[in-house]
Length: 277
Image (tube, rainbow, N blue to C red; front, top):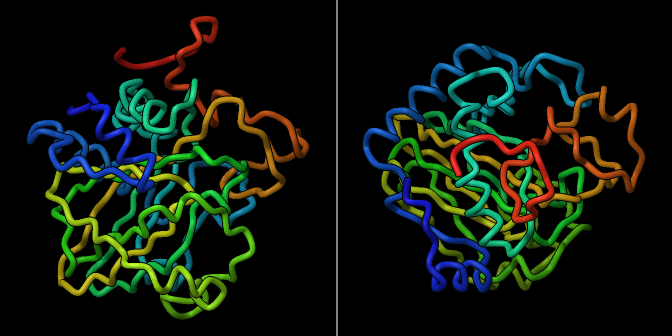
C-alpha cells in the first residue's frame, strides 16, 4: 500500500479538497480488496446495512439501485473487510491530510455503479452525516478502472471551503444544487479517472458528483468515510443504529467503539487502536 504522503500532496489536498493516488494498491493488494468486498457484498444480499435496527430501511427496494448498488459498514460483518478497514495506516493518511489528532471510521460502503446506471447528483457529504466537521474525509478505492464512460467522479476544486447546509434535495436532475448556488455552476469540475487500485481522498464538504455508467460493465469502488475523534452528535440519524440513537442527545460525543472505532491517533493516552502501525 502506497501510504506515505509527501508535503506537496498534503498541501495540494488542503487547497483543492481532494487528492488522487493512482498507485495506491499493488496487484496483489488489489485482488485482496476485490475478493473481500465481493464476498462481503454477496453475503449481505439485499441488506443495505448490517444486522440491527436503523432509522434507514435496511433492505433495499425497487429503484434503490438506479444510481448504484450500496452496501454500508461491511467491516462490521465480514472479517476480511474488517482487516482492511481497521488498518491504522489508512487512519494516519486521513489524519495527516486533514491535520487532525485522531480518526474514527464513520462508515464504509461498497459503491457499485451497475451497467447503464444513472449519474450521481452534485452534493456535499458531511451535510448528511450525524456530525458537523470541516475535517471529515473519505477514501475512495477503485476496484475497476475508472473512466469518463463508466461513471467517474467529478470534484469542484476548493468548494470544500464553504458549507452549504441549506441546498435543496438532489431532485431529479444532476445539477439541482446549482439552482441554489449558481456560483458552483460556473466552476470547472475535475474528472477523477484512475486505474484499478488507485484511490482518491476527498474532504466531506467538497462538492462532487459522478457520471452515469455508459458501459455494459459494473464500476466497482469501495470507500470509507472518516470522522475526526471527539466529533459530536448533531441530531441527524443517518446510519446510526437505534441502540445509539436511543441513548445520546445532541452535543454528545460519538465515541462508541463498536460503531465508530478509533483507528489512528497521535495522542499516546488514547487506547483501542487496531491494525498495522
